[in-house]
Amino acid sequence: MDFLKTIGELTRRRVEALRINVKAPSMVKAIEDRNSEGYLALIAEYKRASPSGVIRLDLDPWTYFNFVSQYATGLSVLVEPIYFLGSPEFVKIALTYGKPILYKDFVISKEQIDEASRLGVSSVLLIKRLLGDALWDLVDYAVGLGLEPLIEVDNEEDALDVVGTNPNVMLGVNSRDLGDLSVSLDRAVSIIRAVRGRVDVIIAESGVRNSSDALRLAREGANAVLVGTALMRDMELARELSGLTIK
Image 1 (tube, rainbow, N blue to C red):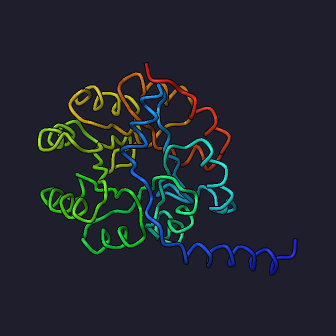
Image 2: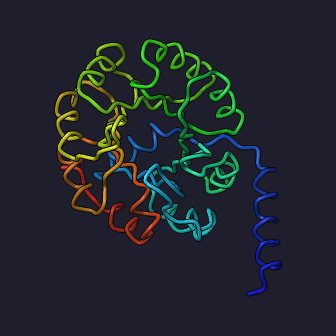
């Protein structure tokens, strides 16, 4: 391999992506359309690392998005740079594939939402446990900029509070406890059961290792699954996940 030639080509493609000025389509509509066809929606996440360590650094975003965009309803892009090795540049690359895009960071400020809006994404992640009472101000701010907030919860109490306040949202149900980072699909199922039928869109996040996990969540009421680590390790899984039906 000629390293300089390889890095030069990747840099050229990265610069081209930075010039893109488009708005990603609606994540909500894409999920609803996929569900109306009888299928579970797949949101494929580009995730190079996590607090548990490096997942994969040799998989460039073009190769990843080229493959998974054939099967995914939407794309999720991590921008947090320390624990997840993310970058807003990856968002610009994702925009070239014409899919709805979730800007995924630990959002605590309007400045981050401003960045998401400038980039042209569909949605922004807002974590109830992180934001507490500040959540709804940021929800309103994001909606005012034309973004679709994905409100994430990791426990039943927060889930019920969110749907009781505004059921017309996308609710992200994280199977990972955001305090100790333990993962439990049983916990996610319990949360979904508590709110299904009371909220427009439920997206199951974290812990999906295979199609059996995704199918279990779909049958409990999830409209979509967001999958990062498993797809980074095996992109072929996207093909399987895209064909799962909602019963």
